[in-house]
Length: 439
Image 1 (cartoon, one colour):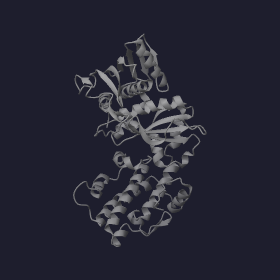
Image 2 (cartoon, rainbow, N blue to C red):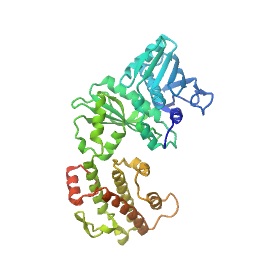
Image 3 (spheres, one colour):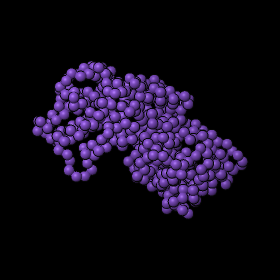
Image 4 (tube, rainbow, N blue to C red):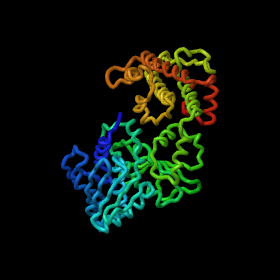
């Protein structure tokens, strides 16, 4: 799937339909306030007004926006200085940066008064870690340098905007929060936007995910970690120390960070250094595969020709129909689902990619470069959206067909060790492979 420049513009416009500030519905492009001559044309925005609600007060900034393929032109018409504070204006500027990042690497801001110019300049200074700006004349400021906030390759991979997309609001909150963090602390080294921010998609079920790497013994202040509500949006902040043992990080955590976009870093080289350390190494790939294979074998879903034979250092005694033979068909269905989940993790690894978290891997698995020939067909049989469920013995047979194909691929790529069992036990002990409470 390819996203054109015009698609990105349309996405940016549609994404900004609604945000929530202190629990009161508001928006940067609210339909009840925005007058648009042609809604289908993303280049025709006029009369933009932002309305911030906090209890009984209303703060307004009136502006005109004009998009082009080269830059975003923002004309600040009015800032009500009697009731707006600098934090509100900083949040507004973060939204402008988020919108512009979707369409270009340049924005021009025109102010009608010197008072407005001073307030806007004060906000831009707070985002100097993300952008560069210069004053071309007395009223126009040129802003650039933030194209790295959009990873079009990842956005195209997800490309699932079937629901209302709040991505730009999430990106704006990440941008806003990064300057707040940097301004009030000297410990953070890297702030990554993860989750919805690099994926280009967020809906009402999404939160804003930030990952902060900070210096040892310099824990950032004024920051509420974990999940909480910030400016009306669910925010989830995770942290790590710069001297953490990255080899002990689990695969899902690595996947989140490898997707992330940098909202700030004290040294641009740090991002590359962490990416190289967190990438899927051959050793990590081997470790996780051996552990996953053992977990599948313990519930009976090794390749068909391994059954009760000593292969790769282990005799594979458990049959895939063990719960059917015991008279518990409903338990067999659950074991099939569990084995399928483990197999999906193997599919990512055999494609030389870390496996994602549970919420996303079933969506992303169909986009992998290599899949078993009947993967889509058999998956639909195993998990029908409607109609009768397959009999338990048929479920087992359908899944084993996929398992055999995946293990053939693992063997072709020489990803199965001579003694899978002993290697997996060592990984469990050292906590460097796939870990599961099952054992």
